[in-house]
Length: 399
Image (cartoon, rainbow, N blue to C red; front, side, top):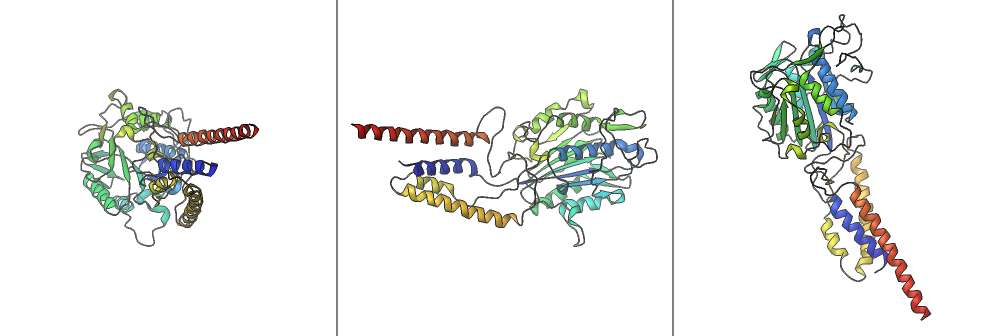
């Protein structure tokens, strides 16, 4: 068997194992909502700005983050540190830097705008920068913080959104194919009631406190004069600071990090609507960035069956592989002109991603490096066979 024959087998082998998967998750979005206003709710502004900083650090660009914030704290006359917002008494990190982009501010933060944002029911005049331009391949992280009660969350001390409202909005999103998976996080009093009415598939939810239970602040800053962050969000951020873009930690690890001793309330998790179990869901499936990738319509199994045939068909198949690669490149260039630009980041493990990797801690399967190791190992083996063939030929001639 000559070298082209070996190479064709290698290409087909790697193609089948690395690319043969269904698409399902190609982009991440974040919707971050502070429903409070006024100086004494400083901590709620700090909560949402802290989550904003986290998702940006892990790779989600501002173009895919919707930030709803009353924005009346940084420049408040009571603020001894004008233009700054802090989430810790040591004031080591200014959350309100030059790179903060608030999409809905002041009295734009309403129940109506929030529901319209989720369902994309806007007039033609609504700018794209203030719309949630998701699709059926989008994972969406939704974070809400403010004052709430049993099955409701107050908006701007003027109106309320109920758990039924959010549940019905998610149902519309599902019908309109506006998401692949949703991770809903809420930090408020009686927070767990806010996801009690959800009924749409592939929605995972976590709340800071159960029914008839308050959600507490973590600590105050004497000079600021008010509490600067809530306990649930504080310990969420403590966990998230360990996360990098290539982290293998799962959402179950995050849930396990919550204890009553830390949070002072009973954190709740709703998993019955979610197809995957939290231990198999990477934190970066929602908090990180992913490459924009497309479905491979070609059936690689036919290629593999063809390549294992004997005779001259192997040599012909090398040309077939090259032509196939050229054709796929042309399609990729044509489709990329209409694709949303997404920042480079490690490929994320998901239920239906194009590239199927298993990064679980208990079982080792395909990773990013395995196909490369196999590829180079086979090349070395082929080179060895070629040298052996030449050596045998020279020996035969000498005899």
